[in-house]
Every structure is written in structure tokens, then in C-alpha cells.
Picture: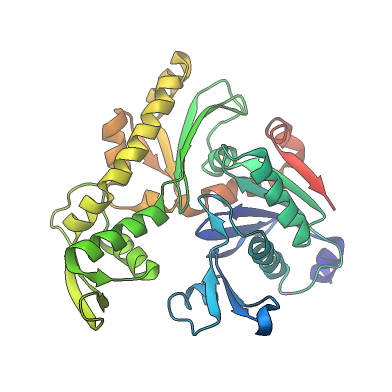
Amino acid sequence: MFKYLSRFLGLDVGIDLGSTNIVVYEKEKGIVLSEPSTVAVRKLPRGTGLEVIAVGREAKAMAGKTPSGVETIWPLQDGVIANFEMTEQLIRYCLRRANGGHSFVSHPRVVISVPAEVTEVERKAVVDATLGAGASEAYVVDEPISAALGVGLPIDKPQGCMIIDVGGGTSEVSVISLGGIVVTSSLRTAGRMMDNAIIAMLRQRYALLIGETTAEEVKNTIGSALPMSPELEMAVKGRDLSDGLPKSDIVSSVEVREALDPIFGGIEDMIKVALEKTPPELAKDIVDQGVVLSGGVALMNGFAERLSRAINTPVIVAEKPIFSVALGVGKILENLGAMKRVLMSVERGAR
């Protein structure tokens, strides 16, 4: 009976709308969904449109393996909407899954995160897609705020807190104090660009063509930001560019690290620029308490240590780095009345 009434009355749902992964938080339940941010579509006859045939994990499994007329689409690129219609379909799928697969009798309120440096047009696109997907109200919150809340930083105090979030589409560093962002900087360079760098390296060095899914597997298996002892190797399978036949090559963690090194350097430079802009008293706080690292790339071997060496400040990996933003959005949902200072920076739309 309670579950039925919950569906009747509607839900409060939080979404971390990432370029590579979408995480959904339901009020009073916690994280209920984590899926790849991809949609598989089939072209309808005579160019009459597209039919969605799979979303999330099922769609990702089809990547690079689809027949003619079927393709997988990643509707978010570099942290912003690149395909509005497919983003709306992705959000609709998430809301339905959060509601146990049922249609909503009363549409949910949704809090959704976006990178801090997106434009107003890009923010509005997120609101419109969320409302179009079935939400009654849509609130947009800056990712650094939600990530900081998710890892438990005291953002409402007169104290400098720095958080670095390196996800699939963007890398973002922010200094937060008294509930607001004091300094922020971002790059549209993150996990997906690392995958592309691995693809390019294997193409150039081995004449081996691989897809994004294989590149991600290589990154997650033998990727590292610092030398390892011992270094790792793995067999990578793909297509030989010289004759088109299948082949396999042994690739080392050293080669992967060399391919990723320019990306690591760019992230380090981004953080240094943010620190140079940070007021001295807040910089002192950051040195005293360290920096928190979140996002999927935070789990890469040696990444936190490399950043720590670059900025001469302790860098601590969040307890659940992949879910930091979603957990922070959840804290907003669970304590809307107590989050007024944070909600001042949230934009609202309504059906």
C-alpha cells in the first residue's frame, strides 16, 4: 500500500547526469540506478524517425556491434547535452526505473547536477529535457556543490574546501566556502578523452584498431598515472589496419601511461590555475585539510598521488568517488529545508 501511495504522490529524485554514466538517487532509498549514459536506436523506414530499442547497460553492450540501421548514441558530450531528444529519453528511462518500472500518476520533482561552467543555454536545455521526460519540477545544481556535499565537506562554514572531480566528460576543480563556489575551473578533458588517446596510441604504434569499450577496459585494467612495480601488461584484441584481419597485441602499462600523460598534465595545470586564484586564507585551509578527489578517474592507480605531488598538497580519494555527485544531490533532496543556502544557486523550472 505504501509503495502504491508513493507512486501516486510522486517522488523526489536526484540525477547525476554524466557524459558516460548516469546515477539516480531516490529520496529515502538512496542510489537506485547507475547505468551508462547511452541509448541504442533503430532508424525507422523512409526516414520517419528513430526508435529507441535499448538504454543504459543494454545499449552499451551493443556499441560497435550493431547491424545497419542501428546505432548507439551518447547524448551527452563533455558534460553538456549534444542530443536533446535522446537525453530526454535517457532521463525518462531513469525516472521510470526509479519508480519501479511504473508510469507516474503524479510527476516527480527532480534535482539534477550540471558542470559549474556551463552556459545558461546549456542549463536551460537540462531543465527542459528533465521536464519533457516527465518531471513536474526541475532543479539544477552545480556539480562541485553536490560533489562536495556527497563527500561530506563542510561547505557552509567559513572554510576553504577544494574538490576535484574527474569524470567521463569533464574535469572540474572548485574551491567552496560559505555554501558558494569561490573559484572554479574546468576542462572538457577527462575519462573519455583518455579512451580516445589509448585508441590513437594503439593505432599508431601497432596498427591495431579498437573500439571505445575496449579502450576503456585497457584504461581500467592497466592504466596508471605513476610508474608501477611491477608494470602490467595485457593482450588487446582488435582489427589489423594493414590487412583488416583480427589480431592481438601485448600492450604495457608504460605505453598506456605515456599516451595519457598529456591529459594528466592538463588536469594538473587546471588545478594550479585554480589555486593561483584562491584567496590566501582559503588556500591555507586547503593545505591544512587537503583536497578531495572524486569521479571515476579518481580510482586510477597513482592518480591521486600524482596530483598531490603536482600541487604539494594532500589529495584524498573520496570513499565512493563514482557516486559523490549523486550522494550530494541526495542530501539536497533529503534536507530541502535545511539547504536554503545551497538552493540559492539552484535554478528551477516547472511544467
